[in-house]
Length: 317
Image (cartoon, rainbow, N blue to C red; front, side, top):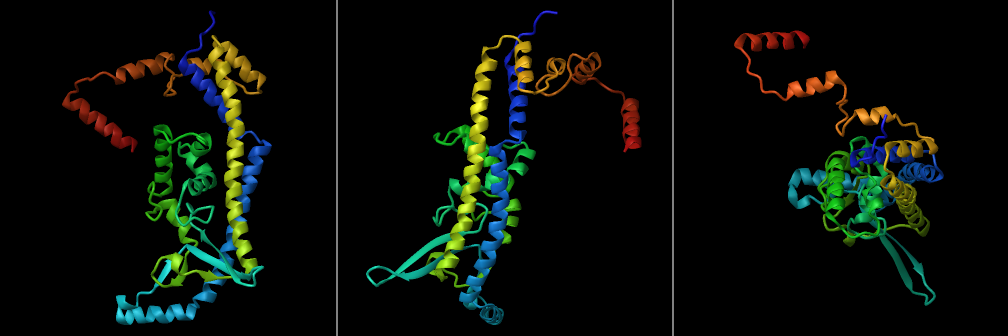
């Protein structure tokens, strides 16, 4: 048999197959990512339980209930209790000049919440969301690694397309972090607390101790560690894939690509690659090819044939 030349489709198939193996290998980078994700769950639980203590100390539940009672009695003029997932926490210390010095920051428990104390969402929060729900995004054919892969690059249509698809799946309208549904809403609803005052959270700084404040910072660091571990893991895959692309581009024959895969410990069925096209249909199988061609024909049918097909369909269902 003559050697089969590599074309773009076969190169892409080989690349995707080998890349998939890279992503599923149990490497140190992947283990660090998985460990960071587990740590986030632990830290979220601790931080939110602490936040509940701090917030309820500032806004006692019994006061909240009284105000809700007055709202029911008098309506909107007494509508001053609201749920929130982000808070300004602050502690005060005496500095070297013997003056009170306040340290405060914005802590957002939302899925897209900031990682740096900024009141508004940004790509750091989005990176966390993608890293945390990577498995769910990948399972639905989405590129959860797009921001990690595009790190350091300018915004571009390719990045925007995948970013918008991820946000839509997660239930966060791109650019509007308060417009939530689905996964994002379910996540955020776990971390809602009653606060008194309808004004912006910036105007209602909640006092806490220095130790409590440090615990909140540790939780936010854990979120940042997940983003960092995800970036490191994807970087390692990207470096391997860059070399893979160079090799596949240089190869002329499929047998060379299969040999590379074998050397990497990856089993590739050369015949299967040849038989299937980009849709996965085995086009060189005579029966499948005949069915494909027949399906393309616009045949006229008699009334009796249509009735017979309908009866056959109903019998099968």
